[in-house]
Length: 334
View 1 (spheres, helix red, strand yellow):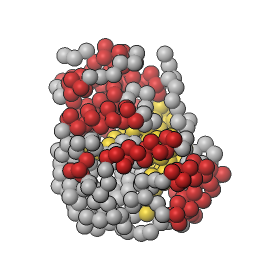
View 2 (tube, one colour):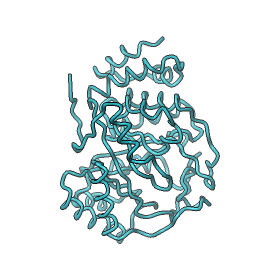
View 3 (tube, helix red, strand yellow):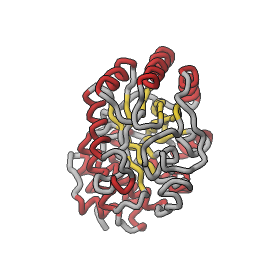
View 4 (tube, helix red, strand yellow):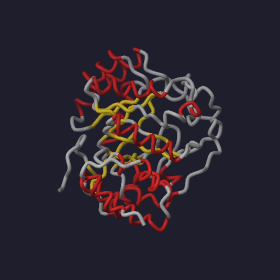
């Protein structure tokens, strides 16, 4: 059996996994799952203790997207019967922040479909963020609006946006199998842009889109190179009417191994179990919080999430504490 605890201690000392070691984690026998989770928890506990960050998402613009992403019900190639609407009004976005406060979510994620925001949409987001920050000073506000121009990133920073999300979604080599309407480099460049503007970068992945294990390792390594502060790990919730509709290749135990890999490869970063956790991790959801330290609560963009009461009960049963401190980066214990 691989000595996962020894490997975890090496990672805490600054060691970076080789591809062979990363593949060994993904290929580990199920009998190794508990030792692997324990080792990943050693790293997680060093940086985050038993605290869990809660995030809530609001879909401020649904559908109407010209991109051809194969996983997305909002894309131009999707025939999924979703609600479609233009940009919400400011008061609706601010009301969503109030709901996030009620749910004890420390991060509020303002998301809009599309290739990137036009000025009118950006103005609404900026005015909303300013009002949210005036009411809830401690709230971390994350925006996810697609590809940005330099001046747009600066305006978001000036408005008070703390974090910007733009997922790489998959590996550079698998990218054209998922979308051809933008490139992998387009996504990396957007993260570089928000970093230059002083906004905390958030970028993550979707697992289960017919990628190889080598692709998964490449994703984790790319995010390490990008130095993303927050890494959402989504597990494909295939939607009928999308090119990836009907795809069902994930087992709960493999999902846990993926989360462990991302913790080993990005030890100090916020690892967030995101879309699809309910349908892919199923009864093993609580185990995911041993490698990960963050979850979404409430619904996602076009799919329903677990009831917030069940999430709260899960955290209580685990003995974990909700973390309301914004953007923790320093270890909590030695």
